[in-house]
Image (cartoon, rainbow, N blue to C red; front, top):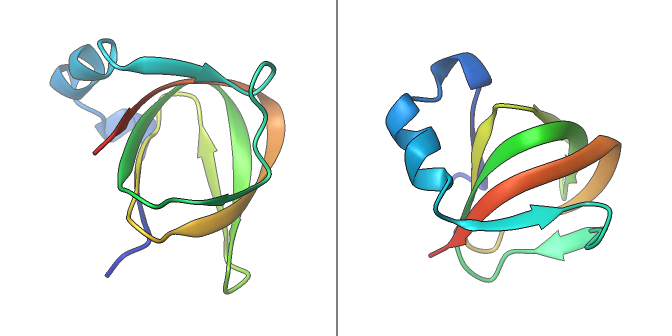
Amino acid sequence: MRDITVIPAAKVTGEYKEEAGKWSTWDSKSRPLDLVHYAASERVLIVEGSANLTQRDGKVITIREGDAATFHTDFECTWEFTDEMKAHFSVN
C-alpha cells in the first residue's frame, strides 16, 4: 500500500480543482501541524505555500502550491513548512 500519492500541479485536472473548492479549508498559521498520523484517508489540494513531509523511513516529500495529495490510512509524517500553507481537504 502506498502511504502518500502526490499529483504535481501541472497534472491536477480542472475537475479535481473544482471538487476541492467544495471541501473544508485549512491553513498552517491558524492550525499548525507537526507529527501527523492519518487514521483515515485524506485528500488535499494545496492552494498556496509549501512543506517538506518526512516519512517514517526518513524519505522527504515536498508538496507545494497547486499539488494534490492523498494521505492514505496509517500514513505518518512530520510536517516542516517552508512557506505558510493554505489547502482544501476532504477526509474519507
